[in-house]
Length: 462
Image 1: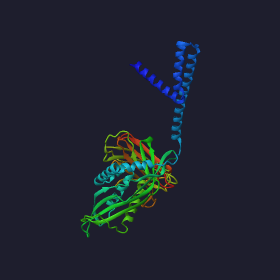
Image 2: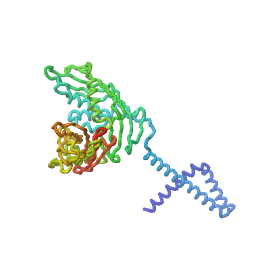
Image 3: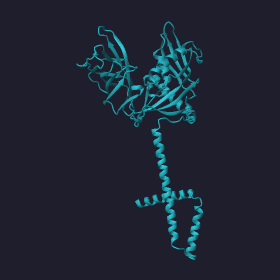
Image 4: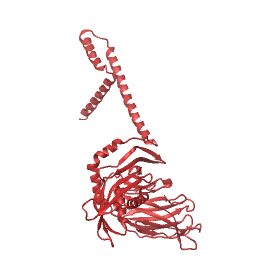
């Protein structure tokens, strides 16, 4: 059996070599019959000398050597092109009309029904799971802000219909290219979504003194900006954000709740208010340097985390006068631990600063003790509970005056947490110079240590 495989391998290599020689020497098919004729003449008519087979063997050896050298050159060229691509700090602008054409062909029957169904279930169940969806979660942010920042005259808002329409967003109309910022690779792609075929209908129940119902429909959306995609953790996740605040326009119409016709009344100022609310939310969550994360897990264990306990230890801060930072240790676990907070002795320095850290996640806050000096050490541990597969851990730095109980807010920073489908956890934050600071733990319960700079020009790190 091994001999047969070896014979087949030699046969395949010989056929490949013959095809290459034929392509390189077009006259070879005519030469071969001539050789057979000469051989027949030599065999039965006039014998040739013994050097003819030697010449043929030398010629075949030379041709085979050229063939092997050509294969080696092609292999080296491929490796060189791959090396250049890996080390090139910036790539030329590449058009991607093919991508938009493909997107248009599969949008109506695949992406639109899938995304509409997914978004509808998200809105009906919980607005918190919006972090799972990339750029299209923008629409959910609009509805979420309508629900949580509704006017006092609206008692309740329910979703009736959800359709993104037949017009997909356009990606990279001016091209796509890669660039390098420090040691971080960044792909810049244009995002342009201008549609008036959207149909997101909400039913609003009016509060007293107004009674009854009203229908609200979002019928058009315009979002235009440059999206940045940043692979992190050796390709285990992608961070995405807008490079700057995008252009946003939202069309909203109103109508009676009992009417069978589509709402068509536009109230002055409502669209402007909604655009303002949405833009503020977008700037706080998805405009540089604030980024969202999409994990690229090689394994999907189909574990949907609905909450967790994050054990956070605020260790110390440094250089609070001038530039400073904070040292944080944390681990995500499924069980509770005792939380303690104290200010270790010997941490006092300059008595002009008496600072403490307030840790916040969602509506839960915890506070360290007050420590003196420009490099205080708290070593305080808290158990922070969050009710989703992702959360934002915020750290607020306050200063207490020497002869006053008044607290002055100095600065803050945040660490975002994301549980991945393979049961791992991703931590990322804004690093020095707005760069990416990311950590990854393979399973819950593992400890991770991060030194995160405070936000601001003359802020520090914790």
